[in-house]
Length: 155
Image 1 (cartoon, one colour):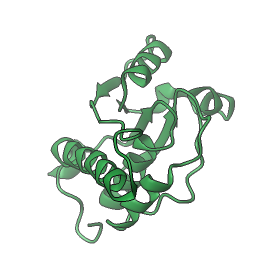
Image 2 (cartoon, rainbow, N blue to C red; image 1 turned 180 degrees about the vertical axis):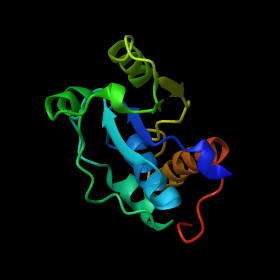
Image 3 (cartoon, rainbow, N blue to C red; image 1 turned 30 degrees about the vertical axis):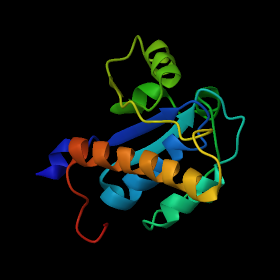
């Protein structure tokens, strides 16, 4: 049943491909296995994957430490055509605008999930981790709503 809800290819995008979209890419791969081809990108790729994002994903068994940030532009340079994705999930307003602009001639679905950007929301390690966990949990809740429960053996 849940398999029917999962497109064959999904692109998650946010502003820098350093926090929200790598978290979503990692969770999608972990929760749904090979049900979909999953990638992520940012409007820019000027940041490495965030250490707090790595830490809170490690807590739920989602490894993202090896993620390499990339932009929409780099995806195209490397031959990834955005129109090849069945679904683009934008996790920030800027990435939604960019995805809509870059796919305006393609017939594909662009969804906007308003996921909180945890950067700069708290002072101190524990408070910052709490903010990042909130972001992670928002992504997971939206993912379960959209794609169904994680596959057996994936969770």
